[in-house]
Image (cartoon, rainbow, N blue to C red; front, top):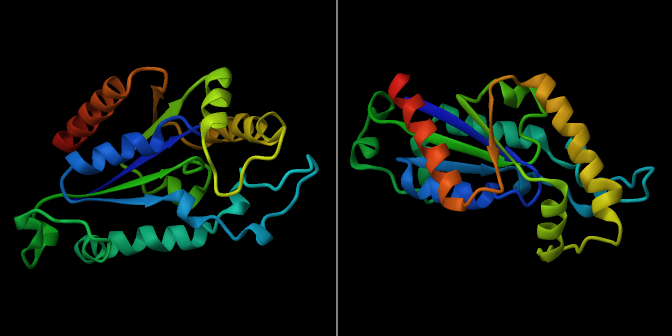
Length: 201
C-alpha cells in the first residue's frame, strides 16, 4: 500500500520540523522537499515589486518534482534505498509491493498550487501562523541568499496571501494546522490523523 501525505504551509511555519519528526516515526517513509527544486538564482525573474520572484511557482522546477514523486510511486522500495531510507524487514522482501505500507511526505510552501501534484495526495495538511509571528521567525532565519530589506512585506507575505487563496480554491481536502501550538501538539494531531487514515484505507 502506498500513501502520500502533503505538508504545506507558510514560510517558517514549522513544515520541516514536523516532517522530520514524522519521517522518524512513520514506517518506510521517504520525503520530497519542494525547496530542493528551486531554479538557479539567475533563472529567477525580478518582478514589478523589484524583488526576485522566489515565492512563486515558476521559481520551481515542478516537472522535475513531479517526476521524482512518480519515481517513488513506481517503486517505493528502490526509491527508499536510493535515498538512504531504512525499510522494515517485510518491506525489504521481494514482492514487497503487496506487503507493508510505503509512505511519501511531500513538503513545501506551494505544494497545493500545482494541479498535477494535488491529485496525488491521500492526506493534506497546511500549517499557518499569523503575519507578526511569520515576520519574526523569518527575520531570525539565515538563508544562503539573505533577504533584501523589505522583501517580507513587499513580496513574501503578499505572495503567501495570493497563493493561499488560490490553494483554497484548488483543494478542498486540506486539514489546517495552527502553527502557534507547541511542536508536540502539532505533531500529535497530525500523527493521529495519519494513523486514522491508514487504518481506514
